[in-house]
Amino acid sequence: MRIGILNSGGDCPGLNAVIHGVTGAANQLGWEVIGFRDGFEGLLPPGDFMVLDRNRVQGIMKLGGTILGTVNKGNFAAKRGAGAVAEVAPETIEKAKTTLKLLEIGALVVVGGDGSLTTGLQLFNAGIPVIGVPKTIDNDLKATATTFGFDSAVTSVVDALDRLHTTAASHKRVFVLETMGRHAGWIALYGGIGGGANVILLPEIPFDFEKVAASIRERSAIGQHSTLIVVAEGAFPAGGLPEIEAAGGSGEDRLGGIGDIVMREIGRRTGKEVRCCTLGHLQRGGSPTSLDRILATRFGVMAVKLIAEGRFGRMVSYESYRVDSVPIEDAVSALKTVDPESEVVAAARAIGVCFGD
Image (cartoon, helix red, strand yellow):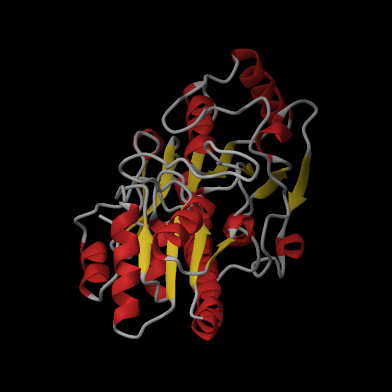
């Protein structure tokens, strides 16, 4: 038996641990493993790949990124924004099938998020034996309780807030920390709670600038002169974005992200010094946490188990502390977003976190 593995979409802490898990479990069964470079693009003839074995994957679990490389564009892109699906061209799929046939690949493990798994589903429907492994730091796949990379991303947010606490307190300033999370605010929510943020702004809870400003003024009234605001990149005010005076003239100044807009508007409303930091791709980089390494390894082992059982068209999932699987179709049908009435949000409100609503 010879199996293939590729990762596609954005990089993510824990990808190498999945590769390690798949390779180790497959080698135990006497199987060969072929790793395709640069995502699905590696499937195009004549194929761009490397042979993976225990020696090749030794010591890679601690590494960030992926030894196989990855892309989020190209011939196989199947998602155009939230929910919009673009069919991969039939001739492109046929080229991939030709490569897999020439290399005698009996199954293909696709490690990716919503977009990559949508592509994987199209390959499966075209007759390619595919197993999916969920990968997204946003934790926004409906069919799994959590994904590897999420804990590492949250840890980077907590670390940033720990550092901002000291400088915010020293200067009596307000700091805005912008995190990833275009459609789902899991990173901002968990990172904000873990890092002791005072205000958390999420895409799922439209906020009011004045309520955020009032929260900051209330803190100042009781002697708490510094405030930390965490805002997910997809968060937005209930009344729409304000018109902000731009240098050299008036009009909408949206050169920055939502973090910059929050910084300017809160500064204008409170008269306080406000600074903004955008974490951006720092959340994707670096070594995975131990939790992500273990989860990713378990995902890789389960992918091999599903291949051995011939259960193709399924995605590895994690529910109730157990690694299992679900149909890929279920995984890509809807995004998992934060429920504003959830226990986690309620817990944050109970300790005084303002969500601006």
